[in-house]
Amino acid sequence: MHVLITGGAGYLGSVLTRHLLDSHHEVRVLDNLLHGPQDHLSELSSLETFQFIEGDIRDQDLVRKAVIGIDAVVHLAGIVGDPACAREPELAQEVNLDASIKLHKTAVASGVKRFLFASTCSNYGRMTDLEGYVNEQSELRPVSLYARSKVEFEQHLLAECEHGLPPAGLPILLRFATLFGTSPRMRFDLTVNEFTRDLVRDRRLVVYGEQFWRPYVHVFDASRAILMALEAPAEDVGGEVFNVGDTAENYKKGQLVAMICDAVGGHLEIERVKKDEDPRDYRVSFERIKNSLGFAITKTVPDGIQEVMSSLPVSAELAS
Ligand SMILES: NC(=O)c1ccc[n+]([C@@H]2O[C@H](COP(=O)([O-])OP(=O)(O)OC[C@H]3O[C@@H](n4cnc5c(N)ncnc54)[C@H](O)[C@@H]3O)[C@@H](O)[C@H]2O)c1
Image (tube, rainbow, N blue to C red):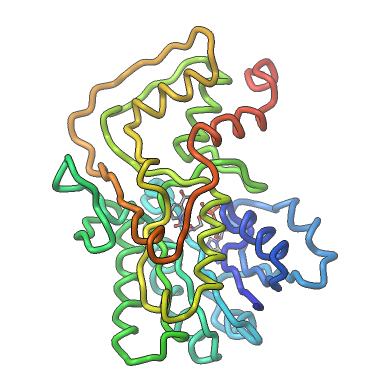
């Protein structure tokens, strides 16, 4: 397949790009390098199967050119996370919703057969049944601009499905758990990565609201799920929503901290700040993607903690 990855220079995108190239697909990345130059892209530039377009998905002319000859679009570009969207609400609305709608329209018009959207389990917000699990049918209760923009674009895509397109033309919606693990464009604002780095570097951590649930998935497994959805028969995935993760990989923040402390070892200082209300508290079922597509993770959170630890410079360098 000839795949366009928007946001392909990002944390997930750079892992996915390498993965698709290794799986003998051709990759074109459209990314405006919001987080600065990415050295790893130059390593790929000599490959005939890789093409990088530096630019903005809000640029309609560029998007029209970027989709020419493309079989599948994986739409990752966005203003990612609650803090980033809260800092620049107008930009978040423009990129995550307005430009995304136009991108999808342009892709369909140019005959792109698959459009895969990276959504998020943050869409579930706060679960109502604190003993249960939310699944793809559960009510979406977004509590941030970030999640609202994701929900609104999901709704747009699902409404498009009502227009009677053949399965091959229907979008695929993947709601990812919170990612962790190493990537050429590393993110240390993701809980597992951040807590691991901070405990190795500072040997102390302040944890807010350790009783709240979240699901986690390794960035490489997220990439595997995308590849699986791209290669699956259209009738199994077109117009469908899948949570991406593993039901056993839901953890309370306190459990996560305990696992990281075990891995780091030695004397560590944990300050627990009590928080009775968190608008986001969700434990997610990932049975659908397992049963429909046979998806299984290959790396658990403890594996990711070890991986992040080994990628860090020794503690003395981190402290300087
Ligand atoms: N990281 C997670 O835990 C997580 C969880 C669920 C869903 N997701 C979704 O996965 C996708 C990728 O997330 P990530 O963690 O790799 O984030 P990221 O910020 O590392 O990647 C986003 C990429 O989009 C690019 N970008 C931003 N605005 C753009 C624009 N206007 N035009 C072109 N490119 C633009 C950025 O330069 C960046 O490379 C996002 O859509 C995110 O919402 C991520």
